[in-house]
Length: 107
Image (cartoon, rainbow, N blue to C red; front, side, top):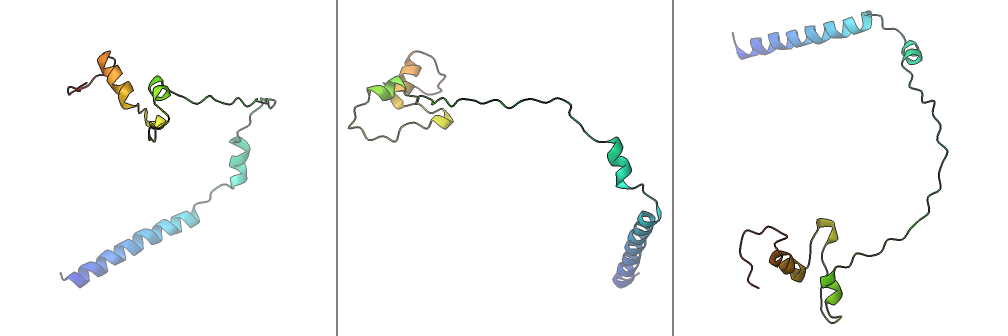
């Protein structure tokens, strides 16, 4: 058997398989979608009235270490989205054994 004859036989098998699938899909009678819609309709009977929610401004989070820094210090501040703290607060947390650290921090 050569590669060309193998490829032709394989191509014919694929064409026969997908052709039979297509014929079976066309021949098999499926009920219209309207019959399914009547039986499988999702209905919620509860009704909730809308509620008006008053806006409350949030106070900015300022830690003790940030409040004590002088106004002349140049700092971008900690990133609150990642839970970052300032270096002074980090050292005080380490001194009070409130965080777990793996290396000694010289302070």
